[in-house]
Image 1 (cartoon, rainbow, N blue to C red):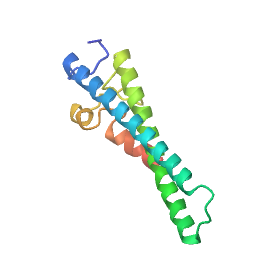
Image 2: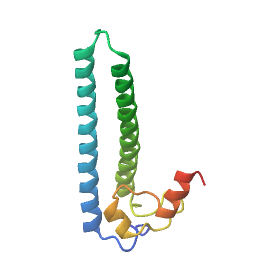
Image 3: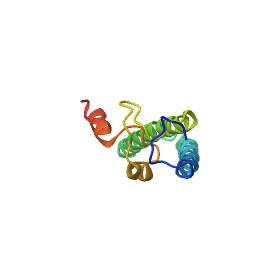
Image 4: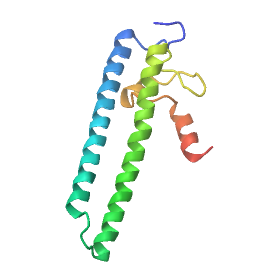
Length: 127
């Protein structure tokens, strides 16, 4: 373990986290491919058909939901990639913002965490 590594994190813990992160990344990438395939199938099925206004509104609402899910997955994938990079650098478990240790229980719950809970909240609220 490097000298900058969070002292409470063993090599075995970090390796388990790396494996979890890779599995999460693969899962999210698979979900993205499934969503794209469903969208292509929908477009093929409904292509040039005349649509009623209600159907069109429902389709637009579903597309907005799909876009929000895609955006959330994209942000999570970026955090997963950063966490994997931090493992490779030897800084996993330390906040990207402050360098403070991220509690082990947070890392167990959210292996892609790269900020402390307080820093994450401040970022989400724009503080």
